[in-house]
Amino acid sequence: MGCTMAATNLYREVVNSISPHVAIIDEKGVILETNQAWEQFANDNDMQDTYQSVGSSYLNICEVAAADDEAEEAAEATLVAHGIRQVLTGKLPEFVTHYPCHSPDKKRWFMVRVVPFREEQKAKAIVTHENITPIMEMQEALKQKEAELTQEREKLEETNTALRVLLRQRDEDRTRLEETVYNNVDRLVLPYIEKLLQGRLADNHRTLAEIADNNLRDIISPFLRTLSSLGLLLTPQEIEVANLVRNGRSSKEIADIMSLSVAGVDFHRKRLRQKLGLANSKKNLRSFLLTLESN
Figure 1 (cartoon, rainbow, N blue to C red):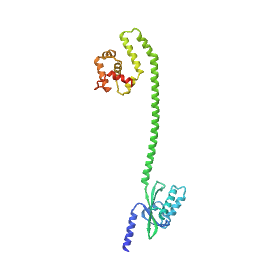
Figure 2: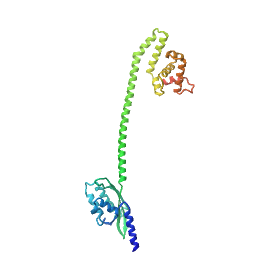
Figure 3: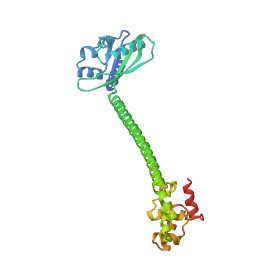
Figure 4: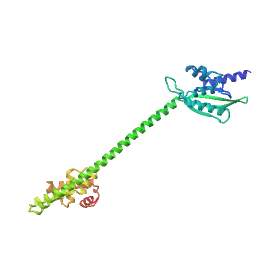
């Protein structure tokens, strides 16, 4: 007798020490026993007459909640009642679900778990409710963050689309501008330079006219655009030297045209070879520059 009492007391202490709310119900769903956490929750939420009472029908509690169509918990209450019956009749080895149980001042969620418990060949079940509010709040926060990220991604996609449209428009505008410059130079400038070169000019004036003619043709050729697209950060003098080298001018001729010393021109040629990746190559600078026009 003493051993039985000690075991019972130990059982009560263990059951009362756990945080989930625990109740044992019989085959009809009547509450036979509850733990301290179950009773404390009922007292804290003014539910002593229904939720806590030993001898009241837990299935009836669920059915009353299910009948309230406006309650958020109505659907879950119906599901829980069905799950309890399935466990009590042996159709389910276990039933688990979660449901909202909000108070006036805060949101709460609980997980309910129902497992069979047989004693003296009678069908019973253990019903536990565990507060999973922190987990649900974390899930809610993750959903909110996912929604925000989705919204940001959509905005970014819209921005990228608009940017692509602007870039395409810019390319189209640049193409039209290039065509306009080409047509204007070809129709309105080059014919007059050709007539000028056909006349009598002093050698230095002819040289300058030929350079002007070549430079204007370069403007409407792919050479300078290719040279610029390489991203070499060439100085204006280096671009001019490159253009004159490509046109077959010697260092002395370039020096005279640009009012530089021959050593200065050679310095620019050396810098060009470095920037064009020809520093350690035997390839002719003019030959390389001519290949740019065909690219």
